[in-house]
Every structure is written in C-alpha cells, then in structure tokens.
Length: 432
Image 1 (cartoon, rainbow, N blue to C red):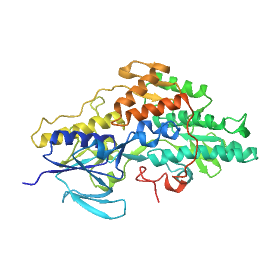
Image 2: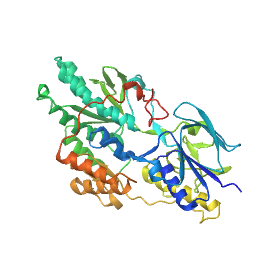
Image 3: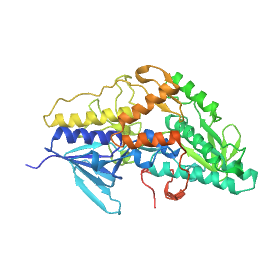
Image 4: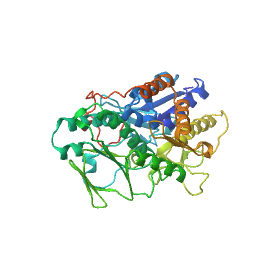
C-alpha cells in the first residue's frame, strides 16, 4: 500500500511548523511535501533590522533543507488546486508548470501587501513583506542620503532626506524606528550634510500607534518615536503619491522620494483561486482547522479564518503566534486522522508581544507584565533568539557588532526598483 502523501502549501510560520511537526510524528510513515517559492523560512519579525542595516539578510532566512529533515521541499508558486481530483499545480523558478497529488492538504499560503485604491501608490510605494523589499529599502535609504550629498539644490536635498512610512502597526513602527537610526548614522559619514537630519514621518488613520496592541505599549512606543524626532501623524493618510512626494489627507504635500507601505496584509491571492469557501477573504475552517465539506483539507495561518475561542464570533488575528500554534495543530490533527493521537480544537493563550524600537529601546508585555526600555529590549532579543529555528549565534554576533560598531552603509545594487512592485502575489521573490 502506498504511503499517504501530505502536501503543505507555504513555508511561513504556519507551514514551516506544520511540516516540522508532521515530519516528527509521521516517523517516515508518510511523504511530507512542502511547496514554497523559496528554499527558506523567513523569520519576519526581524526583517526591520535587515532594512536598518543591523542584520545580514541570511540571519533571518532559515534553510528548509537543514531544518526539515524528512520533508521534500518543492520550489514553486502554487497557482491552482483541483479539490475534486486532489491535485495542485505550481510553477517552478524556471517557469515550468507541474502537478502533484495529495491525500491530505495543508493550506498555509500566508499573506501579501494590502492594497488601497489611492492614486499613485502602486507605482511609487514599496511594501515590506519579504527579503527583496527589505534589502531594497536598506539600499534605498543609503542611495537617497548619497544623492542628497551630491546635490547643491536645498529643495532636492530635503526631499531626498524625507522618508514616509504609512501604517503605524507592528511592522511600520519598527521600520520607522530602525530606519531613523540607520539614516542618522549614514549622514554622519557625509560632511556636506552637516547640520541636516533626515526627516521621518509615520502615518496612520488610527488615533494611536500600534492600534492592535495594549494602550500602554502604544504610549511607550509613541513617546520613544517622538523623542527621536520621528513625526507621528495620527488620523492622517495618503491621498495621492507621485514621484516627487505624497499628498496627505490633512492638505499637506510632502516632497519625498521614499514611500514605505505598511498598512497591513491581505490573504494570498491563492485563497480566492481555490474556490473554497471564505470568511473575510480567508479560507473558512472549523475549530479543528478543517475546511467544511473537505475533510482532507486543513488551512492555518494568515490564509485561514480560524474561529477565535477567546472572542466568540470573531476569527484569530494574523499574527506569528497564532500561525505557529495553528501549524502545529494542523499537523497533529492530520496525524489523528491516521490514528496517531487525538483530534483537538484550536485553543490559545496570549503570551504578549514585543516591539523592538532599535538602540536600547523596546516595549513589551510578556504574560501581560508591562516592560519598557532596557528590560523590554532584553526580553525582545531573548524572545527572538528562542523563536529563531536556526542562525542564533550569527544573529547574536550581528547584534553585538551593531552595538559596538557602525552599520554597513554601502549599496550593492542587488534589488532594483522594478524588482519589488507593491502589487505582487509573491513579495518573497524579486521580479525580473
């Protein structure tokens, strides 16, 4: 009798941990296949430190082959699922289309940049969901400071030294915090810019930064940002973006050459293409992560509308904590369907959050204990080191070098502007 074939789509937090758990519990009794556009798992929470010049991009990318023994990794973007025939199609890195069958399927396709119908944004803004975008932003910051140094036009110099981040959630707040420290350091190496400090603006339509987190964390983060000179513009959005700047909803026009889009995420477009039932754009599942009418398909992470047991009638937020737990539960429930273990509904306990603001600043609420400053910074670093599946020693070494030295500030020209469009179904890939 042929061994069951379990296919996992996506190697984000949910897919990676589902594959890891399945490989462990199956003990070779099943073929576990992971289909993903890249050969690595991206530890997304540390991505702002890549754009801020603190971490080498390789530190936040974890090799699937090294960390998932017994799992077959297939490089490709899934573009269709035949639920009746139990097959899926994917396009490999060379553009070839292939198909594979499954006995059980785990949909963990994740999410992509959220788009809004604002004129010019798709053409002039860049998102922040993958390594290409983080590397592009790092080099963009360096480039704009160097171009500001090269010009004698004060208007152009001011525009090139102005950086706008839209979205004051977890990602946008950390991107602005890390970017501000990085550009301040770059300017110090350019004597012609003496007396000029890069201008950073963080915009959000909400009435506070980090609107999804506790009010105390929000106040602490906003205080740090404002003390550093970052302009936090709440109740404000972009109404139009151009090559020369952005028009704000309060009537101001900001001359700028850099617009970073961190307004949130939406489920991967694959979700809609599957034809499976959806709730708020995410695949509908029950408390066991199973798709109604398709007991062979489970969904988890950002792509799944998992009922939130702590908030009846609501679905779980798109966070790494939920994705990790759901990925492991999906693996356990698949194992239970083969007689190994017991099927369980999704339950969770909020462990709190950490927000790294760079330097010696952070805010955190581990197990709802409020922390800020150096204790929160230590908590954030410890949490990330424990959560990283690999590269811990190298990451700690990068942190040490950044603390006692300077951040590397050279352009490598690896990711051109056209390679990281905002409107993309695969932000983890640089477009050709």
